[in-house]
Image (tube, rainbow, N blue to C red; front, side, top):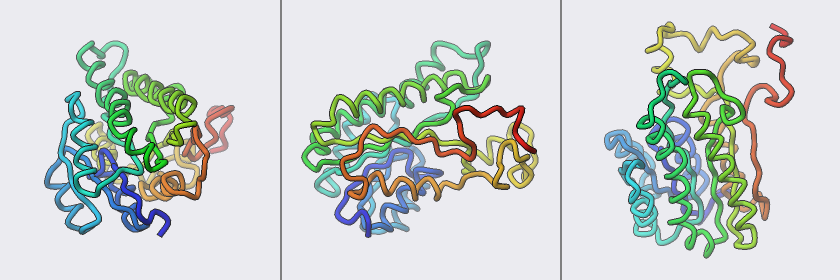
Length: 258
């Protein structure tokens, strides 16, 4: 029980990586405030997790949502020792399709909401010498043509993680950042099919994209999260991890062996 007595907020926790993290945290002894937008998904998950979980349905576009989410966790479990900023939108936009309205929505959910969730939770995290885990993307490091606003938002989130780790190390609140590679979630499966790929696309990826023969699973990200949310990682803060199948730095795809 590596997270015994921990109380952890997981945003975007009703599906995908967030759901896997919520499930793993409860399995490791934590109590979890699951945040999401889909009430049916959330209620089904909380029913599965039992008394160790509570649900908060809230739209992170609303600037008041962070305070409500933190208040819900405290009301349910009396404290907050960990925060996982996982919720994000992944719009497919380019330089030619992006608009100010689309850009502002992406930044509101992917950057503004994590910042103000940390602000709202900070007194509780400081009292418990707690931990924040921000779920980013390798797209923060360069991105793709169709991920322009998403890549910008994840770059900003990485800077946020490093800034707060440096600014608040002496407050004994720790910050960790994951730059996650290509993960096979239900939503990613649906998105790729919607763009024209066959239903079995994930089983037929070339080594250039999946050298192991498959994509990363949400449960594998969740397993990594446990260490950083618990006491095993001690005083370590400011860590940025690339959770990807290739080394991100120095990689030359042209020279990759097929």
